Length: 377
Length: 263
Image (cartoon, rainbow over all chains, first blue to last red; front, side):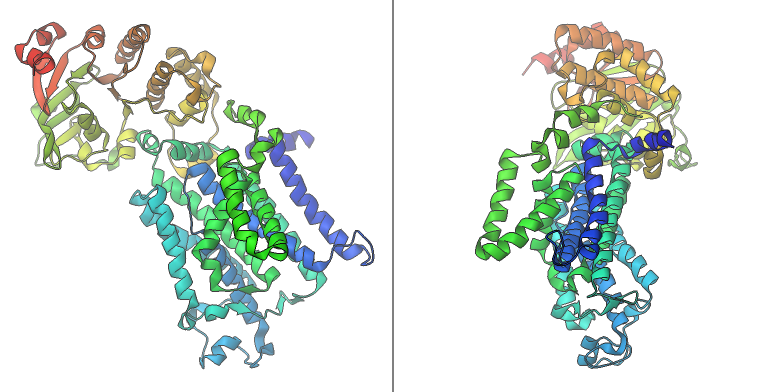
């Protein structure tokens, strides 16, 4: 048994640092429920529920950062519009949660969400059909971001749009979506977005147990998303991606269809971002068009850069830690936060080209690099 | 792959000159903003032979390589591979899959990956995305990589990142990557640029060895190196063929002397 597991680990190409990261995430999925549900509220070890949801939110950001690192760190595709895929996954989940409200809304309409009643709409738009079904909504969580990524990538990669030009059109993409979602006519709640959710799968969203379950789901999603990306980057496919990052035209002359590789990994990344968004929404209780705003997407890239580009766990840690810092500083020094974020980004770029994980030898130092350069398999 | 390659239309017979050629350029013209980089260039490479193309800077050598490998589409003319496949209709990946490998003027290897991984990436195998995801190196493929590592004298450097190699070693690694593709035709662009004399000599030996089993088209402007290749030479000038023949004949051709030394 032990030997069988041992043989399977190399498929993930997990080094020591990756194993530690995975253990931390899975450990949190076990420990947090205990600290919240089983420890008395008076105990010093008790973890309040708001903190559980806050940590759950960070884990979603961690998964989002992993998805960006997969394409940016390993394939050189700098997406400055990944917030769009995150938001689309979030909206798919939000639409399901809206339908779950049923007649408990302010206007008490059995089918239409409050904002549609307010707009005097008579019936549900066709694209809201099916979202009352949880399984359908979950499929849409990955399918909608995946389809948009496919369409976008199909045109962009076939036309060989690369580098800064690609980054700019990803910004344009998320900006266009933001404008569309801001409109009341589009049918997604306009600038208020979707909110006032009541329950998920019949469980009250305000209940401690539901919050803990969402946290655990987020931790597992991060762990599985991380492993999926590991499988990809540890395979020959991953080595082709790195080759594309470093010398794209050379890869073409070796006979690889670069656009197909990019399209594949871009779609996988968008779907992971969608999952992250879907888990984020019930934990923060709202999704609105501001998630599509271009600065949001740029911030994601900053998390990845600060955490450590091209190591997956570094990106996840960046997503978690930067947002932890954001929560702290927007409370303690609200005006200073953007300056602090900018300073961290500049300092990372100047002094830590490998990000935070590059500073710890075991996480990304000489040893990891030597391992990466050996012949595998 | 070859089935989907566009063959010549039936009413357009394979040119008689194209028989037994692995590559036949037929009146290829390329212009950039009015500048004629190639001017009705016709040239052929016989199957199983090594050919050398020389010419001063700006003669159109690299543009010719770009046309053959699909990087540049010509304004006019055809590039026929094995007599009846028109390369001007295909893109880089399709041409590479047909069996044409290219070595660039500036050595282009994947610097962050090991020498071994560079060769593995070039290894002839299914180029599909999912095939790459499932790919496992077989014992035979591993042996093949080992053999090529020996050929290009990089056996001891197999685990080193390609970016840490010397300039000459990078050139050899790239030739090794060509060999891994197992192409029918190797396009080799200025293989000895920036090499020491000893490295240049070794490279000539290596290319002669490769030419025993492959068709090779070498582009170079180092006359001494081309002499060491011991093969027929085509001189390019202003996008067209100026002279063709053995090195001794070509070197004594007054027009060639004028192009190289005059003006």
